Length: 217
Image 1 (cartoon, rainbow, N blue to C red):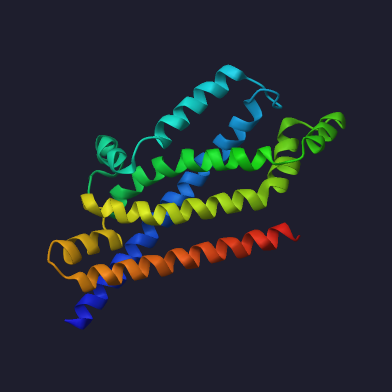
Image 2 (cartoon, rainbow, N blue to C red; image 1 turned 180 degrees about the vertical axis):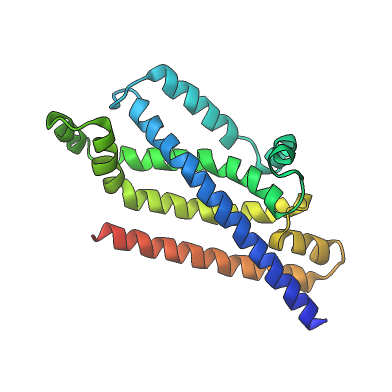
């Protein structure tokens, strides 16, 4: 019995790692350039375009304001189209990615706003292109803030992945619901909660350490 439970916990933890890792990475791939575009196109930005900025901002805000449990259900048709099923770890990655991308975009935008405006103006005066401003001024200067934002995102995704268990998304959340709640095994639920807390602490600690290293370069 113990070996069976241990195997289930290990499998569920691996599924959680996969969900959080893949969705966080894909979310960053979409959210990072989106956050840069939001910053560049805002009023007074390097590529000022108020109309485009508002359109992107409305889309980002619409997704961010949708409760995740509702988003899980709402994107089921898209999930089936992408991965061929609406249950399981692979299926959970789709709504997790959709939820994380706009979240990351706003955090990146906020981090970029903290960059000294004088550095950008100096780069422009020296004839730097928009690409050079982004990759040689904005991103390097905002890197600690961006990493801090990504850390927050991955921590949030751990909670979201547990919520995905409510619709058969797999992972520790699914294990806690099926065994801890439906089969009345509170010790399983407690173990799941403890593992999630430790996991979140490790992610947060690593992110904080990385931010400190980048800040003291």
